[in-house]
Image (cartoon, rainbow, N blue to C red):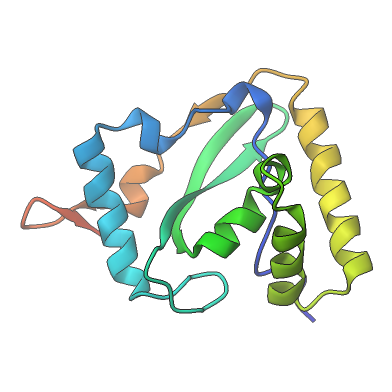
Length: 158
């Protein structure tokens, strides 16, 4: 039995809203990086595995609750449905909560009860984290993507 869900709800603490690697980099840099992530995915969502013509480059963050630092951990290519579920708070705000819940439930193979319990815990964690001011640590970008011989981004090979 899988201990870590394939699809997770990632609620960003309020002090980090509208802050991201994508907003930190120049547009051209971000476009090159996300293009390399899309190429790696080969037209498939790296979370649910479904083919998608409209992938999203998703930033995965690890949260150090003691130091209140969000550290960039990974960049993944995900489909719009996984993106909606991952950003469940936004899905709720725009009236697409049921769609996000159903996709989360399906991808993880969970019951409705387990899915709702998981979402409840995610919102509790978000509420606690949102009581504090956080900083971003994007230094891991150099281990996730670096410039290759042609000057464009190259992905780590393992």
